[in-house]
Image 1 (tube, rainbow, N blue to C red):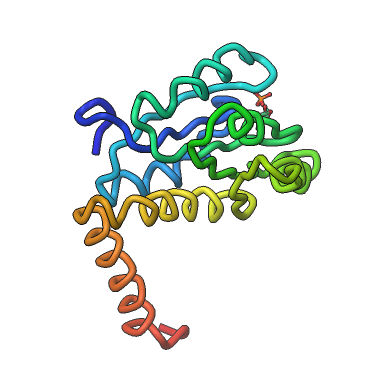
Image 2: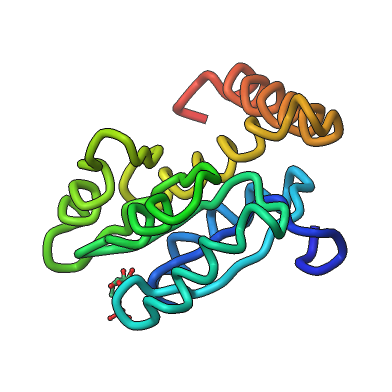
Length: 167
Ligand code: RP5
């Protein structure tokens, strides 16, 4: 669903434009499942005031989840979670220097009281964050639930139909 045709339910944010190669996989899943969403660059370090405003207004704007991707000193997901009770799904971007271990540990080691749901490093984490956000919405939005069920059924069938790795 293209941005702007319906009020976004999921915000996809990332610390830098350089994170898009990874975060596009979250957006692709949301688009495929018809989840209204928006996409923004919001940096914890370069635009902290934008981060605070994004988090402070997220609930009132109707966001039900925020998918936040960042790399290196990946403070974006945790800082968003510190400013809003809207669930934050953190995606560790695979950094060049440390292969994303820095990103993963920065996102996952939150203090008790401020939860961030942390996903795998890189493309798989981004894709799964998109699927997870859709699952969070599936009960309340049956069309999203049906799209998710269809995706999973097709995924399963594709494996069954291609079970000989030599062909
Ligand atoms: C983080 O620093 C971003 O999330 C990105 O993964 C990393 C590098 O950013 P750039 O220098 O490529 O803009 O804040």
